Length: 158
Image (cartoon, rainbow, N blue to C red; front, side, top):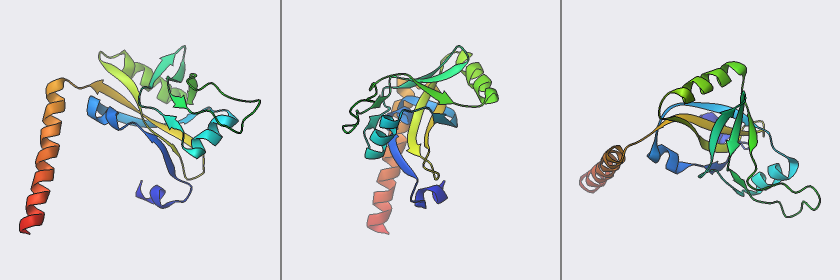
């Protein structure tokens, strides 16, 4: 992954940082995403949000629901809908695995990162996740605070 970040074509467009706080991510998967031309142009300009979106398996296909891609101003005739459902591209085996995962109680598919890969193709990383309870969230916050405090103490006394 570190190699991709140094690549000039690799660019993170949108990140769902809240997902790692609200969900316990068991597994993640890279998917292709079917976009229209004006959507790709808008993504290159940086106008998108995947925080409120989710992925769903419907009729044997994987869909990204409620993701926002800003309208592209220069598109006069071929404008796109901002919050339309977008088809995600995965293999049949991966689709079966995702469907089986979502059938388990409490499991859902959440988008984690939307990015352009090293070839310049738009990709989305989705995670198979289970919702965290409030006490789990507080515990994670306490661990994070303690590690920050330790770093400060080591820096001051180091």
